[in-house]
Length: 290
Image (cartoon, rainbow, N blue to C red):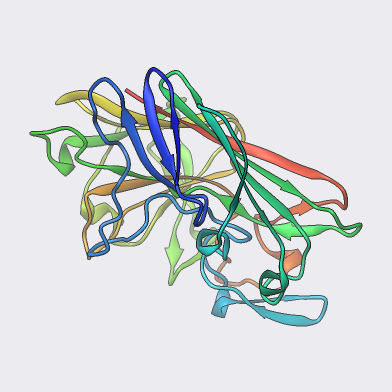
């Protein structure tokens, strides 16, 4: 376990999955991250790589061979090494191995870089392709925030606030896969009430265009959290249903689940990233507490 601290925050990250396990305000001692109650959902903030979401039949094809890869990929269940660390930042590294190549036939170096900046935590994904041929992947975050957050507040006292305040495309899920043809405009120009029933049809998935932030707030407390990304094409909002838990996930994604009509070919997958040989992918998001 790695601990980062500054004047505002104390953050802990596990080497298993390079997963955030705690984000605490040093002044109020308020815990912002869901504490992984296995009775509902036993994770805090898994890293999604080399896919986001699920594949049709948990299978894809590449260069004529089929591979089995379960939802969200293997990084969340892999042991990372700590390759750099200071008081307020740390880098976690995962490289390919015979075990990963059995599921995903690419050489790679994946780094998760966590860095504190006042009351914010910056999460950076760096993917290096050491091969000469291109690699194909998805990556994303899945941080779960406590809702209700403050004492004497309830789950449905909270709402989602998008910035900029404009309508966004929402993409429905059907049996764990996206039904892109049924996408519609969502009223994200106004606040969206949080309720457990709102997740009865699985995650709410929004398309993003340019810099966007999404906040969990309540009029009954000054405390909340904002996730900001400059360029993630999608963000998922999810909580467990019907096995309810007191959390909401805000998930910036560079990738997405298979479409209902997916061919299964990795190179044709909707939302896939293509990284040229010798190239580096570097993107991320920020978490700000208040």
